[in-house]
Amino acid sequence: ITVIAYAAVNIPNTFAPNTTISASQVNANFTAVANQMPGVEYSFNGSYISVPGSDTVILSVDVAVPTDGYIVASFSGTAKFNHTNGARDSIRATLSTTCPGTIESSVGGFRYSSIPSAAPTGDYFNTIATNNVFAVSAGATTICLIAETFDALTVEIGHPVLQAIFVPNRF
Image (cartoon, rainbow, N blue to C red; front, side):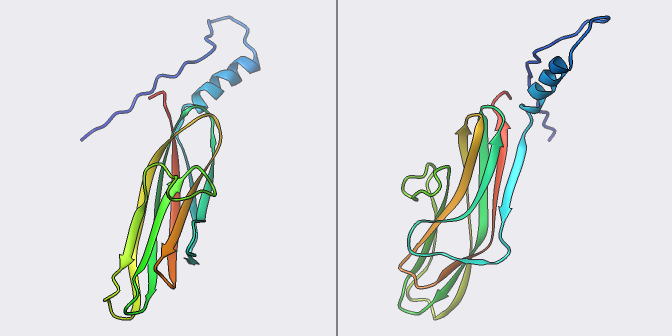
């Protein structure tokens, strides 16, 4: 399958042969093109991060948004449960532009992972991942990963990766 993407860019200045132009006009044209280019930001932690019982920002990434558009954000990591038989261990995570924030207030819901209480005592590892699309305006935007545990003694998120891709809405 071949996919071709096309974006119309409004260039503020056009030039005719033998016309004097200024640096500010050329720079304005370059800025118009640059503002329509997608951009990528990411955050990575190569270790395990302990997740407390309350909503906690685990990772965040700042995106300099040049123009109105969308941020496509995704998170992946490994939930490590230090499980004890008879106890239920659970974690949930979400992406948000409200940092710090709460899982209940996030747009797009959350991801949930758990170990049943009947499971034998031991360490368990579950992949946990989520994504979301956020409409954004020009300016600084922070995307954060919020996580919490409940019914759990010890849960960690290992090697979390948070990615944010800006896409202008001119496409």
